[in-house]
Length: 333
Ligand SMILES: NC(=O)c1ccc[n+]([C@@H]2O[C@H](COP(=O)([O-])OP(=O)(O)OC[C@H]3O[C@@H](n4cnc5c(N)ncnc54)[C@H](O)[C@@H]3O)[C@@H](O)[C@H]2O)c1
Image (cartoon, rainbow, N blue to C red):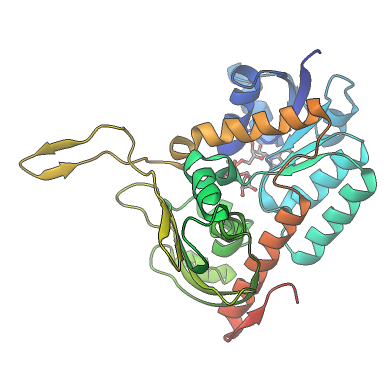
């Protein structure tokens, strides 16, 4: 079988990494062309640094017969339009999170992709991380008994404020990975959330009613409880953890140390930590694309899917509304 030709929309922090993986690390795929914004196109063409031919826009990308599947890694506020445009052209879509910037728009994306019948995968890379995969297997096998409590922590360095302006906010952009992890690890659904937040890093977030520190209390359908803690502050490096407590034990997914070797000296234990998400989840970002390509070649349904994409934004939306209006908010209403 020949390789699958990929187009990519967006060559920013994450799109560039996806392009590198498709071009050199994912067997069965090849990088064909990319669409970026006007300013970046001029810069890449002038510098000769473009990783593949650049086209003017998404319409030009999907019009190419050698583009057989598309990765959408443009800013979140454009995902709705870009995903629908690719799906309508009949090409499989791998989309970065979140699927859209409102629940209503996300439901429209789901309807459009389902109507088109194209394969779809959402970029929740933690589902391809060996630590999260092992944790899920253990929990599903009953190793910790009945799940009673979830705890997820995500702390990252703050991106530029202009990125955050169109990101949808802390819960849509960052904690959304933890919301998906709750469903992936426990197999349970979140019924209701109660959230609070604060600004401690970037005062300009107040201009668009965003926060850089947030806590979301979760109530699961099973009656289990949980908490997600997210912040745009990570002085000691990228900090990601998930703990699932059960009636007979707990599972902790935590692989934040950069090297599988530790220095012990007069300071005690000195361990280097991952700096960026592109380091911590590098292999998972490659493996999620490999999973997408494998599903396309087998003709099976890629995972995580449209339902996973939609549930995560419903939780992010409920958390955002709870933080703004106070009180518990039921997810999906
Ligand atoms: N899964 C993850 O862990 C993860 C990590 C980072 C970002 N993301 C998501 O990926 C998306 C991109 O984030 P980023 O940090 O790479 O952003 P970025 O700002 O670094 O890059 C955005 C890219 O989109 C391009 N772009 C802008 N407008 C466009 C248009 N109209 N048509 C085509 N291309 C256009 C820009 O040229 C740029 O290459 C966001 O939705 C973000 O939430 C996911």
